Image (cartoon, rainbow, N blue to C red; front, side, top):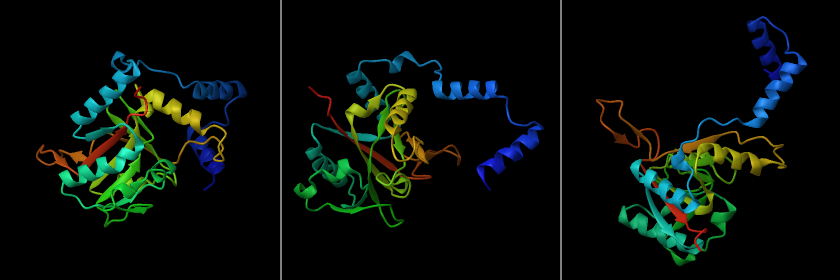
Length: 230
């Protein structure tokens, strides 16, 4: 069913035709303005404190992290994490240019397979688009370079994130995404899917007992590259 057919069916249900031009312009103006609600003061911090707040909130939500100074330190940080958790060194990894630019040869035991996650994969390495300090949340927009299956199928998800991509509140993360999509071949459209991940998957539906990995990864580990460190 086409877009026009869907809208026509909605109008029939509302028993009205198309909106007058002035009302249509008013709606578009509101959509383009992205009005703000109240933003808590805890997210309005100097950027170094926002990064610290993100990491504290990540830990509160059962996530873990390593903090490294350079991208070249990422393989060692991941290898140490895998060893500490007794996890395999075979991983599915996002085919993102920033991850491809990392020299993984320093850890020859790590085996990487680019692309979407498969049901048999136990560990995934995802590229972190942005993070929200206020809630300890990762923003992961879908793209060919950032497959969504890496966020869902594997038992352990490792996200490589640059500190410069940490923002205070969710509104700022959306601002970043909208700004960076302007002028792209996609025609300024937002990604088809944007996932917000706050800690590993968990549920307490059964007898109020918290179970990790209920609907996705049971472990979430962030490798934070301190690209803002002076």
